[in-house]
Length: 136
Image 1 (cartoon, helix red, strand yellow):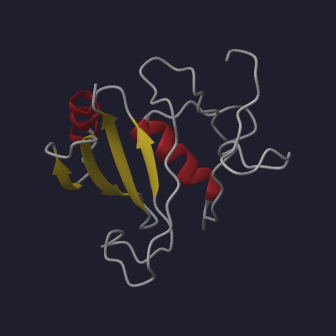
Image 2 (tube, helix red, strand yellow):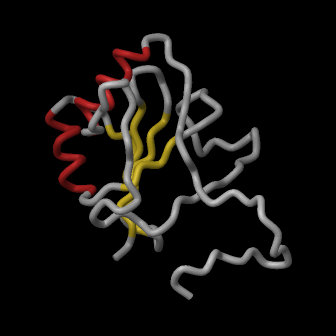
Image 3 (cartoon, one colour):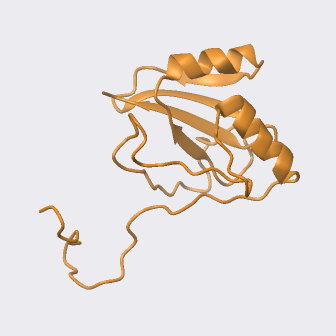
């Protein structure tokens, strides 16, 4: 029902996570890395140095996926980092063309996943970045 708070299965009490409020990670050079994300991936940086990624943006998926992986996973490879960020994109082909024009290497691409189309790259500090165009 519109206007009604969401109920959590088996627990009607208050005090539940409702979403991701931010993504934060360390960098050797935060200003340079933020500039790379702005220049290469098109994040619109605010005056305070971060970006606001809005859920109501056109073609944004209706949810955010949260998942814990085994410490032995190779899904983040070739990155040696303990985290990876998945960015939803509106047009994977257009973004990959922009990346190619900037000389960014795409590690892998997968257009066959039932959840949509994916591509992966590394940022300048070796963090693996997953780009996802949700299935429409």
